[in-house]
Image (tube, rainbow, N blue to C red; front, side, top):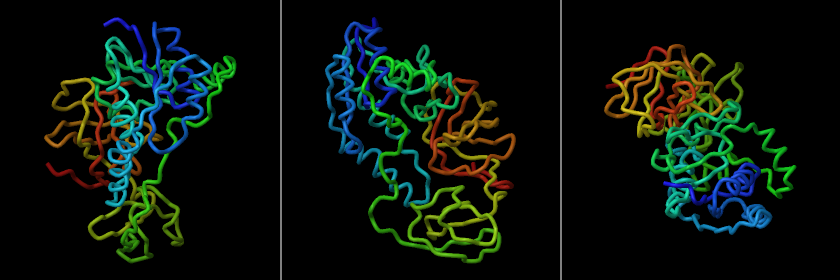
Length: 333
């Protein structure tokens, strides 16, 4: 299908502003869309669109964002999980919704630092800013009609180019968390328990205030302690030392396959958090998703986060981590 037009998801930040400028050089016709989620302001998007002479369509997605991203993330946090709202939002709202607005011959454009080549999702060239992790839950059919022009750019060059062009973009990062996953509803409290001794060492006011690997907010215990696990049944927060955070594997469920079919068993790298380095692992597809066994222990694997399987720069498959296996533990079949 010839690329006659582009629809740019415009937030008004530097990244999407430059993506809009580059789209004007590539497509015959360009329009922009600002997705209202109830967080942030469209003012910068309006200024950027006006400056570049592009019509801005403002899409009311407040109810979709609340129902498909914010509320599920809060429920996950209340149940002892560590949600990834940005990955949910890209799949269900930012790209998913905007993709549904495409006209015949149009390509969706965003300012993410990642690449789509021949329908395949790849890391951005600047590893430090790569955002393929956050796009890994987006359906391949959506990505197949998406252009990510900043995938080969460095962030520093983007800033310089936006300033040189005089585009009145804002400075807000596209990955900034735009709501509090702890929510405003009261939660039942519970105990903070030392994993090694079973001793109750404190109390808390809700599981949503904690995540695996966290140090702050658990009190002083005479040694460096971290949140190791959260039990939604007993409402307990288990804490321990740094060695207690080390995991030998995890289960990844609700998977999105980007490059398949997957073999019965294969080696690849698995990234379990955005700021974590990918770790070599053996992956076995199972009925409920993927059984991941790390070659070397990985720190602070948190259920609820996204697990992404990479072959070099290529995203092979991604899903939600539903269980972390500490050293010596086993995954059920």
